[in-house]
Amino acid sequence: MLPRISRALADWISAGARGIGQIEIQHDGGGFVLCHFDDIARKDLEIFRSPNDAAELAKFDDEGNYRPLKTAPNLRRGWRLELPDLEALQEALDFFYPGRLAVLAAWEANRLTTAPLRQTLHRQSGMYRVAAKISDEQIDTVVGQFCRSRGGNPGCLRTILWSRDATGARPSQHLPLEKFIAPIDQTGRGETRIPLLCQEACNLLVAEAREVVAEARETTSRAE
Amino acid sequence: MSVSSESSALLIVGHGSTVNPDSSAPSLEQAAAIRAHDIFREVACCFWKEEPSLRDALFLFSDPEIREVYVVPNFISEGYFTQTVIPRELELDGRLTTRPDGQVWKYCEPVGNHPGVTELLLRRAREVAPQVPEAETSLVIVAHGTPLNDKSAIAAKREVEKIAALGRYASVQNAYMEESPLISDWPRLTNAPNVIVVPFFISDGLHSYEDIPVLLGIGAESGAASSPRAVFRRNPHRLHGRNLYYASAIGTEPKFAEIIIEQARAFDEAALDLRPIA
Ligand code: SF4
Image 1 (cartoon, chains in turn yellow, brown):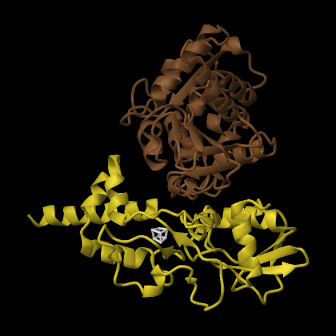
Image 2: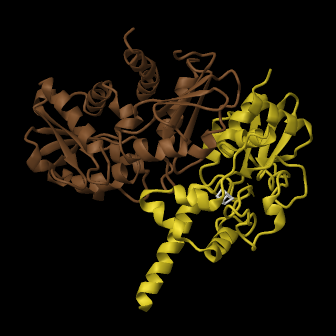
Image 3: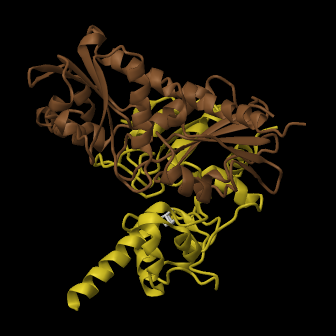
């Protein structure tokens, strides 16, 4: 029997999923061909054949900048990755979108635990402890910019499954309702695509919350 | 229970970085090397500052066949991450944590605690300066020093003592980026005609690419256009009448993969020692 995570991937593929995040997945005999979804028509793509190549392809954007958040919508273009089977596909996707298939499989098995943002922030220690001081209004703005699927800064293609706090409130009113509903795909293509889920605020958002608190404090102390 | 290719998984925990693309490389490379050996049913990495996160790692080993997960911190020493961040984020109760489904998570010691690190430091020193007689060489192990609850300075000191006791090098000493003895004082700290400097870090990054080279006086030679790794290829540097050899971070040594496996095995051996005497 296939391991649970491979089975979840296989199910999505046989259900007709066109891809995951910004990646298009096409069947090729028993194998798979991957490319950036804006490159489908291109004939001049550089060809790669190992799932390990995905690690390098995912590392930098088109401008050569390092991508600290792999689910940000800035995957580089110009490549075509040919993979022999499902196992290789899973390996490659674990480099493109690390951990996402595992989290999706847990969600489908009803075993995924999510954490409200305030709980994540309160758990922090050291330099991040101060992030917990962020106000609800600041959360509304920061999450609205940071996690936005399109046109965000940096933006992120995950569907948010966490609430702001124990009340269950949505973290941001600036984001459309679909941003919080799984398994709706966040690329806006209206296709069946394997969803990228966010069960808990990432470290980058926590760092951003800390920045917001620190900046606000600086502004206040300057005004005094 | 000991490590089994049927029922054991390995989780390598690294720091990772939001700015340095090379930070996670050693953990990923070692994971790939260990995977190829079929010692564990599954091998995965997770990172504090990269994906998959430590929180994601809670969902990586969902198959019921996986009965135990060995968690090995790819850190150079005990410290804030191994004692506070990792247990908290992975929801570990202590060395041994049983999850609701009965899966057991075994929290192993960080790689830097393993006695084999000494041998790897010696190996790295030989590699970087293969023709140079050890008796005419000063070896300097450089660590960061000072940050809150960072025990890497203590670990680096322990390594220096062990290597010095072998009596092979003209001198062996510690130096730090932010506390004395400062690495920038190397011409005064060392006396042999050859000097080998090995950074006591898990991965290469700003510290080993730029900060330490600048402190050593070889930083200005790096052209902006060249790869950051070029700094390790220009040995020896002729400076202050000595030959200076500069190595890359010790954690990039491929043999660290073996140390990771041994730290997992050591967990069960230590647990045996702790059994109450009947
Ligand atoms: S918190 Fe989640 S949705 Fe927001 S940027 Fe991080 S990973 Fe993406």
